[in-house]
Image 1: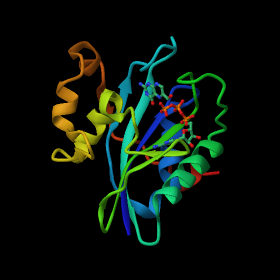
Image 2 (image 1 turned 90 degrees about the vertical axis):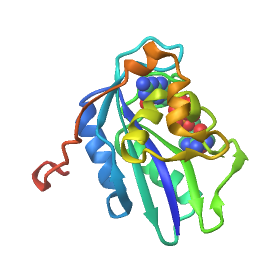
Image 3 (image 1 turned 180 degrees about the vertical axis):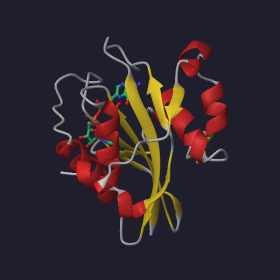
Image 4 (image 1 turned 135 degrees about the vertical axis):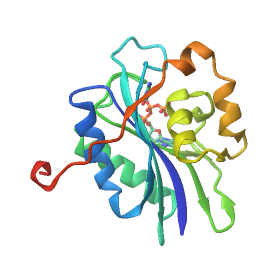
Length: 174
Ligand SMILES: Nc1ncnc2c1ncn2[C@@H]1O[C@H](COP(=O)(O)OP(=O)(O)OP(=O)(O)O)[C@@H](O)[C@H]1O
Ligand SMILES: Nc1nc2c(c(=O)[nH]1)N=C(CO)CN2
């Protein structure tokens, strides 16, 4: 049994529909889904705002690599092309942290680094996560409420919830 925190983001095409389709990839394992946040682009690339959300997932028989494989499956289903690092994308799905029976999973392999090495400085991850798990800690970094407070106020306040995810009905599923 592992539990994981996943971050999903989209800034190309129908951002809400892309996130809804991505969440359905994880559906049987979803414990909590944050609302959708509109977030300015993090990083050096000028681009449109993202829609971001955080999922808490849990499943028997899943390890950290399994969560990454599901993230890649969701990205492929969204037709993602990796053209520019930190650039525009239909879907970005990241594994933020994973816990197993022994506690937090840590890994410094570049194929899957855990916890995600940039999560602690990303308001677009911390704000949605805080909404669904106010007492959460990012392993190695401490309470997410403190991490979010440490982020520049302008950046932090620009990340705002725009409401719940509109789930895909059966008719709109392809
Ligand atoms: N915790 C992680 N979550 C997702 N991908 C990871 C993680 N650690 C390492 N990777 C690797 O990073 C590679 C590039 O991922 P991706 O294209 O999503 O990066 P990015 O979104 O541009 O940047 P960032 O990693 O800063 O979010 C992936 O193919 C994956 O193998
Ligand atoms: N606001 C926001 N900015 C980003 C995001 C994201 O999901 N949201 N993903 C990125 C991935 O490289 C780069 N920048």
